[in-house]
Length: 448
Image 1 (tube, helix red, strand yellow):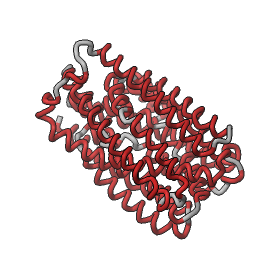
Image 2 (cartoon, rainbow, N blue to C red; image 1 turned 180 degrees about the vertical axis):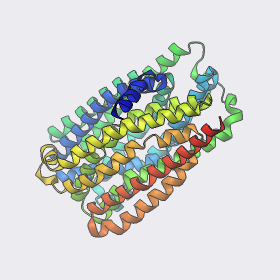
Image 3 (cartoon, one colour; image 1 turned 135 degrees about the vertical axis):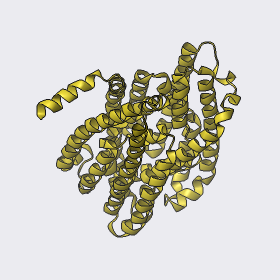
């Protein structure tokens, strides 16, 4: 039996789609590992230098600004990748550029709206949610990142469509290093929260300049005969309804993800101290570090599945998903087990004794994050099937359960209740979406 399994694994090497996906994913995984390490090193720096109270305030400010931005942000990244990949598969370059143009126009308008709302609501939000009016100027300062980085998602989507995964790897790694320096230097110099957020604004300005410059160059190099803003939107006239429906559901699922990742912090902060928020945030970031290992798979899977669907290669799509599930399952289970077993020493080493309460939270969160990582293919597969509504339905159900548990448990159990609510979300959202997707793929395969 073991010989048969090993022979099957060796046979996977001859699968060109899996080989391409793993090569692209490996490139992103290497950079993702570096990015995750740098981002977590940033957490270590801030937790140690700002202590739980200061890190809790930092978390509340970034969470509020992010929530407002994501409320206005029309998430067109998935739409650009989905439709752009389809047009590229059939060599309709003008249509691809029209999709990119639409995406840019939406990004620019929504980024401006989000900035204005954050700027004018900062005094009110600081008093109500952040519990101190002193944070209002810091919220307004951080709001400038909404203007500066408004086109980042479209730029990244275009790079995915063009297959520039190596560039995405290098860029994300360098920007993570820059962000670490941008927050660490002011923190070490004792400049406090204001200095840290000034560093973040400067980092975003550099990042946006580099990103826009390279994307512009890549488009001219690959499609020298067409400028992106010369492509008429009328080329998409026959698909506007389809695109609008797609954008609607991807936005709903993004709101759901926002509630999953940000609402817990604000609800916990409403009922408990900023110090407890800081401990919880550290635990969740360490726990969910596991799921981030599967992000490269998600980023490279959507273009591949979209092209397989366009060519009606349904059996190949199923085979690809089975193999990806096996690979990520083995890898994430091993990492999750290691983090759960050594959560205490890891916490002491990274954050210090002030954060030891995070240990039991990590042991809960790490398994929910691992489950989400193993089934991360559900969302890109649903998008490739043009069924984003499945993500909406399963997400609404899961986040409703999570919010209900947050309101019921955080008043009594604090951070432990918030982590239990996060686990409940993971147990509902990802398995249910994966089941719907697999059922449709099986039906398509039977029709061949």
